[in-house]
Image (cartoon, rainbow, N blue to C red):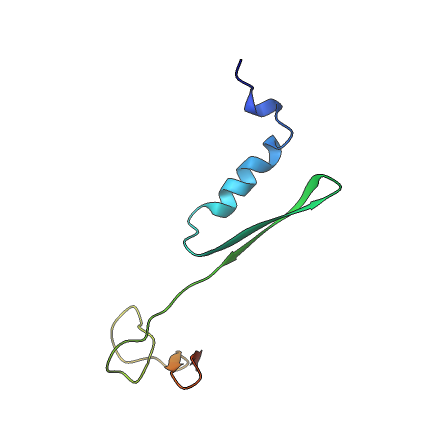
Length: 83
């Protein structure tokens, strides 16, 4: 006999968990439990950027044009993005 998902004690949280997972390519969904009850769902999304070859490490922009003021560039010495 199949159980009805609506009678499952996690039913109210399942939609929220699935919503947190939706569209997530890189990152984590963390579920916090206190006294056997879910109390919090955290979503951390990571976005990965690749330096554009031949541009001294500038991060690729959507338009392909010169970087705008305030845009990020890649500092290859430090291994991190900078403004």
